[in-house]
Image (cartoon, rainbow, N blue to C red; front, top):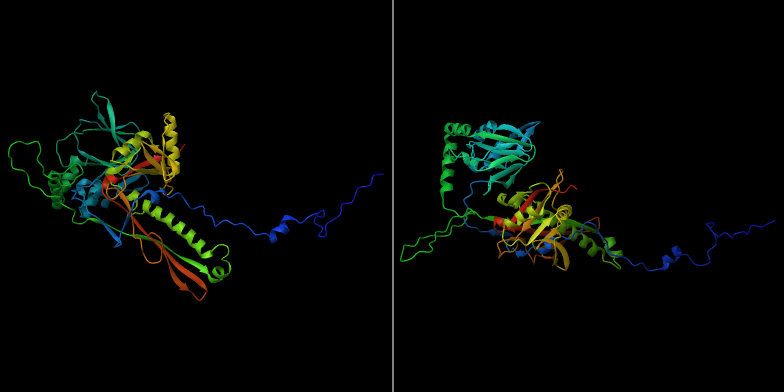
Length: 469
């Protein structure tokens, strides 16, 4: 009969008796090697790295420009009740005809005079050469503007989308004809206003007629292609002709950028700061992570703030939309062609991935460039940098931003003020606010910043970039 050997139990009954000290108990006598606190929110923040920063001593930066005669080229906003779409009367001021017009009663009458129309993909809205006599507002969808080429083949000149308009010149000229063909690229909702209805309202309301006449006079002024007051010059002449006299006119009300601020109050208990400061300074680590969060918010505001954010500062002439949906190399070329010396492009990482798929479809392999000790993708030598602060809309579209940078190059610049009291980093300080009755130390942490666009063509945006697979 075999005998099963007995296993000697440990004194605590937890299992076999150990022959040496266990690691769990040994750790109580060991020194632990620790990392500093980590934070997932920290991103590459390329925008803050590559943007040139200009010192703003007075807290305000003024951008002086030549006088520009703006006749309006904005985008209008709509409202809908079910399938019934209407243009907001005040938004009609975004049209060239009505820029600066204040009579809300007349604007409401105009808004109510627009007729809603629906078109299916492929429908021709107007044909080039036909009599022109309507104003079109695109409420929803995508419309292609085509013109015959040299050999009678149609070329897509531009693509219009939500909020765009077409045909406002028909009111200023009578008997003219459409110079382009409009074709719906997707199912489209448009609002149309007949020229005769507008003229009837202008006859009924003298101030509207006077406004249109004043607009005609503005449009007859001599300007360059950017709308700036022309500088009279003479060239290629011989003999002694009388030379033209001229002067350079400036804007009387230039835009001013006041430094914005991102702030928080950092709280640290005195017991923590007194007793738990070895081997790491608790206040220092709390401040470090707080600064990281402030810098993240700073970059977000520089992209999205409605007053000075890049997505909202972009001139409407510098906004284009993709031709087919996803951003393609053709769209990037169109974006780059809108300005000289584009230095950087910024896109959401998902937009960069979608762009990579379009490159792969065409068998293109964009080269990389070295930037700040990193290798980043580029197109036509322009780095495409990730920026997760660029939003993605609910319908899965986003934007790509293109910049020319630098004050000397009339580009985009960052604004800050260095040397402020209790400064921790340029333009960022942490000010001691005292210790409360609850024994908590308080620090006011502030970051002061803004971003300015020197001239409109320094900033461009490619909109409606689809990122779906």
